[in-house]
Amino acid sequence: MARVTVEDCVLKVPNRFELVLMAGHRARAISAGAPLTVARDNDKNPVVALREIADETVPLTGLRDSLIGTLQHHVERDEPVEDDMPRLMAGHEGGMEAMAGEAFTDSMSDLAAELDAALGGDDDGDEE
Image (cartoon, rainbow, N blue to C red; front, side, top):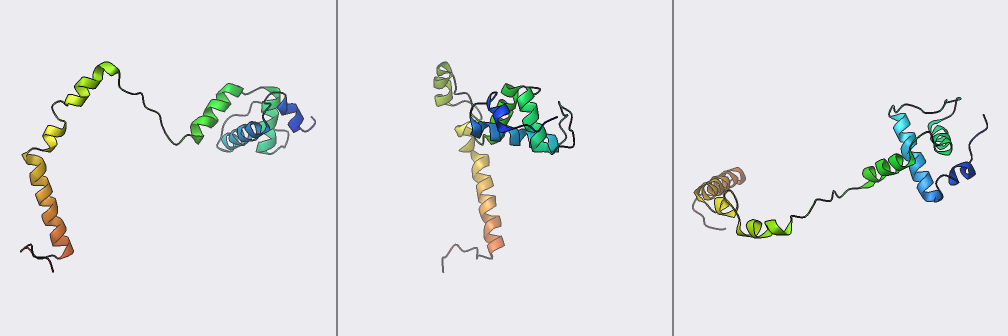
């Protein structure tokens, strides 16, 4: 079988930059053990990935979505529904009121004492 050229793949993925990203992503997936969808024919992983794209044996939308997922560093979260805002703004049990309680104050005092002991500070509170 003849070697695949970029011209064969550009018909499937018109943007050359996107083609390079998708082929590289697929080649890394093949290196990680993903099953091949075309015969290897003694080709290296990038060539196999380009042949798969040219022959459309891998779903391009799935490959594109997988690529985008690996490039995203920020995971978008759904914003709270506007009906929930008054409840969220007012707080509820276990919210800020609990942090201002006795347990929070005691744990901060214990933490300050441990930090002071670890740093070798004196207990009289005077600064040097």
